[in-house]
Image 1 (cartoon, rainbow, N blue to C red):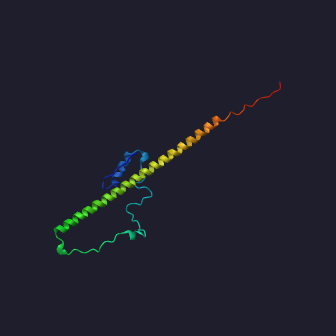
Image 2: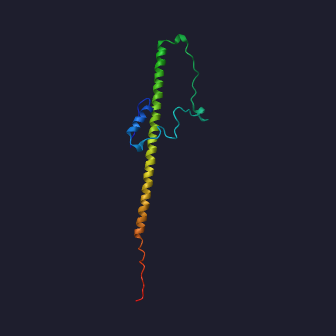
Length: 145
């Protein structure tokens, strides 16, 4: 089994060349399998999800006199960390979706192989059963002599 670990921020530009290098039976028809929503779709929250969200304190605006160089440096570092975290999550989600797609294909292939083996076993059983049956008596010709 081939497992592809993608470490690029823009996974979609990397998928097509990798697909070209794989054997045809491992190609995904789409980078995401049919049951996964496209990334740009927003999922509607469930009624219980609002209860699960942790309440944050009210935002308190920073007065302009406290916005010094140190403040802007912290904001810049925080923005970079948030972007890095979002990118890492996106890559993880893409890897999971890609692996799920490959596993679904492998599962379908294995199920087809099992079905073929069952059919072959059935055919072999019927051959054995036919072989074990006593031969039909040959028609005897009873001509009076």
